[in-house]
Each structure stands twice: as C-alpha cells, then as structure tokens.
Image 1: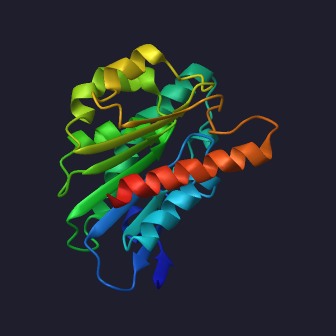
Image 2: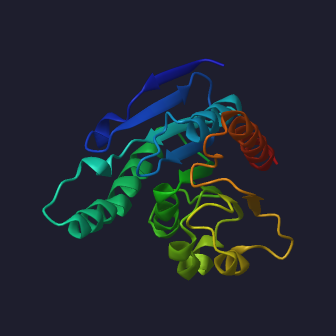
Length: 217
C-alpha cells in the first residue's frame, strides 16, 4: 500500500490531511473528529488505517473549535458548532473533486456525528453511502432520523456509561434486526473504561474489528 500524504490546498481555511492512494480508487472516506477527540487518537487513527488498507482515499478533517474564544461561553459553543456544517461541506466538495469516486464513506466521532446529516442533505456530487457514528450525540440525531436513514448503511457505536447513551433514543434509531448498533457495557464517551487501560484496549480491538467487518461487507 503506497499513499501520498498531503492536504486539500483549496480548503486552507479548514485544516485537513489527505491520504491519496498511488493506485486508482473509486472510494473516498471522510473522517470527522470530536471536539476534544482528534484524528490522531486511537478510534480515528485506526478507522483511517482500515480505510487505507481497503484501498480508499481518506480525508481527515481537522477543524478545531476549542480555539474559538468569546466573552460568553454559550455564544462560543453556538459559534463553533455553527461553522461545522459549512466546514465539512466545504471539505467534502473539494475532496470529491480529486477523482471520479463512486462510493463515499463518512466516519464521525461525537461532534463529528452531528456533521453527517449535513452531508446527507448537502448538494454534493456524491452522497454518503456508508456512515459510522462513533459515540453519537443521540438526542441531537433522533430528530434527524428520517434523513439519517436515507444513507443505505449505518453503524452506531456507543457505551452504556456515555453521557449521551439513552435507551429511548436508541429505540428510535435501532433497526428491526438490531444490527446497526454496537452497544458496549460500561465504557464512557471515549469508549474506554476509566483507569483500566488493558480492558480499554480490548474494547478498542472489538470496535475496530466491528467497524472493519461492517465497512468491508
């Protein structure tokens, strides 16, 4: 596997890393991080590796809204999240110009999961066909259920100790076969057991294998 690592220069206002396969590919993956969970952290690092090993080009979108400063903390949050739609659509549009892609996969973590519906309703040359929601902010996503279900393939991964875990919300989003959710007992919003590194590594292994099986189906 030979990959060129560069950036999408046309989108300099939104930091990103573009992993371009040396060989031709029709598959593009977008990686959307959380507010405090970067693309270099374990879940998204390995998600990137899975997609590269599958032969896809990968764009890691590296927005950083933690640097936004305002007198009012509430206003700052609105300001940060208000840019999310604009930023991810901008990067997606430029990324899709790099080749004649036929399949678009989107993998979001936490805040990044809120960006996925924006991509589903955007006027893009290619709509997402596979979406992975890592630690989704379920209360924000439930009202967009119908839009989310326009994506042919969805996978949600969440722990029962995540502050956004809510059985009521899951009941609205889960498929009749219950095969679109991976629910892990006892792990937090980072899909980890606090102060238990070895068991956290086992969870990471389980999640990455689960994602790989889902993405390679």
